[in-house]
Image 1 (cartoon, rainbow, N blue to C red):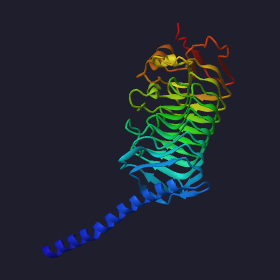
Image 2: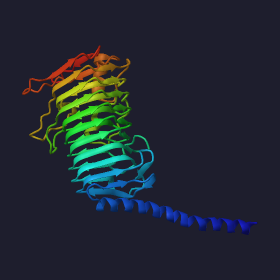
Image 3: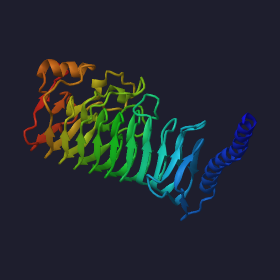
Image 4: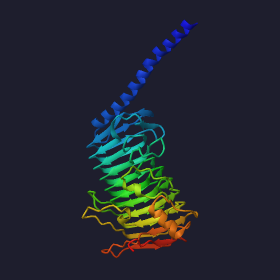
Length: 372
């Protein structure tokens, strides 16, 4: 009996080894096949990501391509998993390209950013998901969907979950549409940074630290953003703890923030539903609120020409997050009834267009007047 059992076990092991080898070979072949197609792609090509959960060990790169479509079967069917990544940090990296469309797939558990696009004119994310499956953690990658220094950006019907900086981020770019997306369990759900001509609408941003951020920051190539429209979004219950790594500017965002505008000008926020964000419904602040030293001589740290109108605010009575100085200040001044719209009072001395607020139902406003 014992000999028969040993023989059966050995037979099972011998049968399993080829299967394990073939599985590993299959994963390697998929990664090699995709990268080869990316390298050899010609204008007008469509590269298909097959159905399945595909283990990818290194960054997939695209450089200098045009008129290319990368298409999976759907977000739920074509999944690129980087949980065993040992080469590179990004999942997919695209640079110096023209008219690239990404559609119908998921990128999971990258060491760094899920999909980074740089120096590209014409980029479409459609039905694309970036996700870290282990929940909100400091060790998650910084950005989910991440076009930077790009032109003509469209992100629609996409999802980002678990980014330790921003789930959907567009930085130093121009002519941008971010619409019909869902972002949750990120530090920032959606962020527009140092970018011009951006429309952010009909998105659902919830259970992040901050729902939607509009920032202009120093020490960047593109110095100033503007003409940003944020409208028809549902921004709710963004009360998640801030899990950004130390040193990240987004680490200063207080949990319970709906929409935050920092050091920007020419921003319109309208027809949004902003509810159940425990600390700040909508904040309008200068860079001085970060208490960071400004070394960039060309940087303007003030917020100006901001319009907030026709929004619906709703907040249950309760204390703001008390682990942050701004939360303690709000709690001392207002107890459990923090105003919906909060302004730091730092008016740009060289710009008379300040803050315009109107027709926000019964929303309450406060000027913290931090300078005094």
